Length: 178
Ligand code: IMP
Ligand code: MG
Image (cartoon, rainbow, N blue to C red; front, side, top):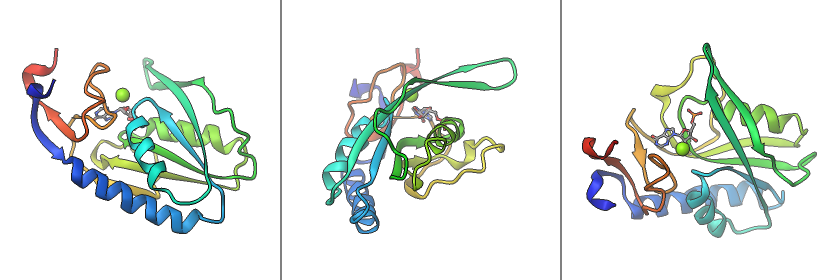
């Protein structure tokens, strides 16, 4: 697997330090709020697992699964698996692996907002602002790393469902795209 990596974009050490830093900031802000952390599957799982271990206060976790398909004019999204927690009146933080075009987060935010949480924020490990759909005005409240417009794998991010288990974020060699 690792022979297919051209270069490391963000090392395991850099990621761990950043996730601890983000978790410390959120611990300070949410320590008396018993927040619900909602992960968007599947890319977030590795970040999510590390993040909640570093979050030092009461919290709950939940997950949702969305799917998207490209229509003739726009991308359509649907909820494949909704959260099970009742978030009405709760402080919610969406955790994401990467904020790319923003279409997924835009959809997820609207979906969760309709459940009337007390507050709703976004924490993304990676942000790729160059790729943002201009129609998406949403911004992330907490960002780990801003990256260039490259296709990244590892630490949850996949290429054809592989490489999610790499402990760092890297870029594939051109010949690894099949
Ligand atoms: P969106 O374009 O912001 O809606 O992001 C949709 C999803 O595309 C993300 O949650 C990731 O699963 C995936 N994605 C976006 N950029 C990358 C990347 O560089 N590598 C792997 N997956 C990506
Ligand atoms: Mg993906």
